[in-house]
Amino acid sequence: MLTHLCFAERANLYRSAKWRRGPATEAQLRLLNERKVQHDEDITRGNAAYIITKLFASHSWEKGRMQAKADFEKRKKSAS
Image 1 (cartoon, one colour):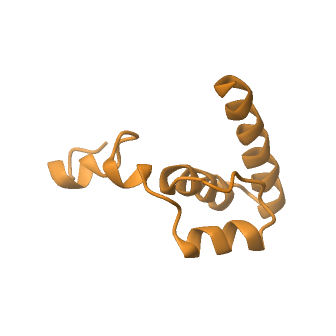
Image 2 (tube, one colour):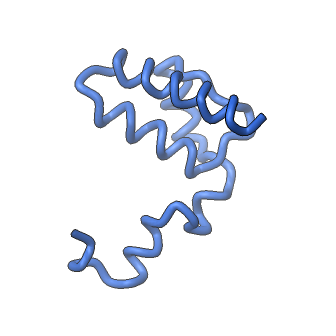
């Protein structure tokens, strides 16, 4: 599975990786906005990466956008 990656490469994949806590990059925000994905103004790099991965992994952008929106709403409710 991840055995071919060195420790430093695997550490960047973890949900607790330090880079995930920073603010989303301009490129991430531009892509989310172009695809009309609903997101918080203070979205993190990790959350943006998760949503973008969902978009690209889906069979269609629309299906991925709807799934990302549903996940956003679910996370928002559980955080309350």
